[in-house]
Image (cartoon, rainbow, N blue to C red; front, side, top):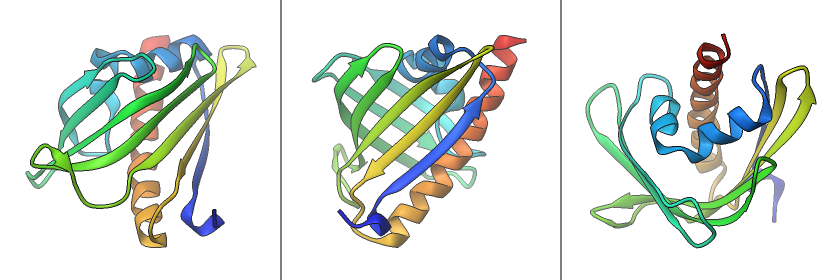
Length: 151
């Protein structure tokens, strides 16, 4: 797999690993932060078990809805979460390839967690970069959400 078709983002979050992990697997929590800045989660369905499916609908600030879905492949609480990701159109897989997202939650002590997000393979560098923008905004929202929960 070519490195230009792989996305890796690392982020240190000021929250305990268990809390960070829970924000990824609890639909009510995920709905509070999922999606790029300015987006609103319309629905978050999550069957968090190996083989379970997840689906999300987000509304962009200018109105259109974006739907994504996937299947959980690996769950090691609170260390690792692996799931597929694809965009959906009309209830069926949509534009772009199905990718695999791997999240690693490293306990840094003192109530801090390093989150590593790995997503691949992308068909194009532009597709990878679009996801980098989206995930970066979502991770900023996650950091804000966790900060409010910890304080």
